[in-house]
Each structure stands twice: as C-alpha cells, then as structure tokens.
Length: 262
Image 1 (cartoon, rainbow, N blue to C red):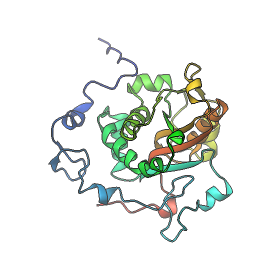
Image 2 (cartoon, rainbow, N blue to C red):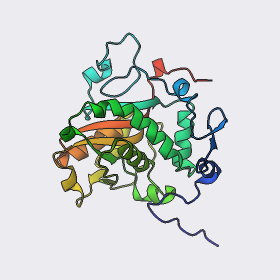
Image 3 (cartoon, rainbow, N blue to C red):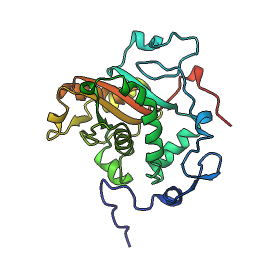
Image 4 (cartoon, rainbow, N blue to C red):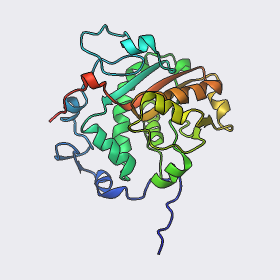
C-alpha cells in the first residue's frame, strides 16, 4: 500500500524519538547526555557556542587581532547585497549534526532550542534600534517539492521562534521559491549564484507588508552567501528598504576553521 502523503506546511506529528524526548519535562542534552530541561544544557553552551569575533557584513569568524567592527578583507572588496549579518555559531560539530537532524530527520522540536540561541545572539543588535527601526522577520523559502518532501521549512520555524523571543513581527512565508533547484552543497560561489538566479519571488499578497521596511532574513546556514544575496535582491526589488541576514550557523573559512570541541 502506498504511503499516505504528509500534510503540506505542517511539522511532523512525532518528529522522531529525540523530538519526542525533547517534548517531555526533561530531556537528555544532545551533547553530554545528561538529563535536564534543554536540548543543549547550560554547561555545554558556553563551550560549544562561544562568542567569536565576526565580520559585520558576512558573519565569518575573524582572527582575534582583527579590528572590532571592521569587515573582513573579502567584504571590503566584494560586499554582499545585504547590509549586515549575524551568526550564532560556526557550522561545525555539534551544530552541523543538530541542523542536519532538524532539516533531514524530522526533528522539528530542535527549532525551539536553536531559534532561542539565534535570538540570544541577535538581541544586542535589536536592542540598539529605535522602535521604528525594528525589523520585520522573514525566512528563506523552500521549493514546493522540497517542502512537500520535508513537511516544514526549518528556516520558517527558526524565524518564528526568533521573532517570538524578541517580540518582533514575523511574516515567515513572505518569500517563495518559484522553481526547484538541486542541492547547492559542493558548488562554488559562482555556480551557486547561477543556479538560483531568478528562483525567488515575494508573494504578491504579502508584498505591501514589506514595502519600506527593514527586514531580517533568517536562514539555517550561510556558506557563500549566494542564496542570501539573491533573496536580498528579490526583497529590495519588492520595495524593502534594507536587509539584515540572521543565520544560525556560518561555514568558517577553510584557513581558520575552529577546532572541533571534544
């Protein structure tokens, strides 16, 4: 008998064994295994998610000696389309594994813990803004086929948790992917740009909500920034005033990838 199709746009009901555990009053920390109340316990977070100096434009990890607030050398020569970027962690263990489980293993319950971590990292930026400058939160979209396959958009889940934590307005599905593209992993920056050129649009019924606004664009991982650049251009073409990129994880530069934490 063929499997029944999963309802579109809805997270899975169970989310797997680990998501079931994270719904209980206590749960094992996903890194040290101790039973407590959070996916990543408070003892592990400072070790696994340390605050690192980052480029203000692309959020790449910078050497400690780099002048504070200054962009990296690549951004000085080739600035991204978005105005600034904030990343919570580097895309290394254990975060790459946790993000993989959120995206590919139906563990939608992880979005709450990971979204809270991202909210904590962007909170200082939001607090410095006047009320009229506070951003509208949107999410990087999935194609229709990918959304049906996965059952939910992990970036939209993260965006909703971040917006709720920071009391920001959120329009998670303002952007749509108008055509399916193959996975971008393994492609160069130029190949990524070519693959996604013209692949996104702002939903016509939601465009008035975005016009003239500063937008915070949420995604799970930034690698080359090509996807966020294309989404930024799409938003600006629809009348958005400016765009910040808020990502859970940033792929580190090859020459300064941090050591894996034991």
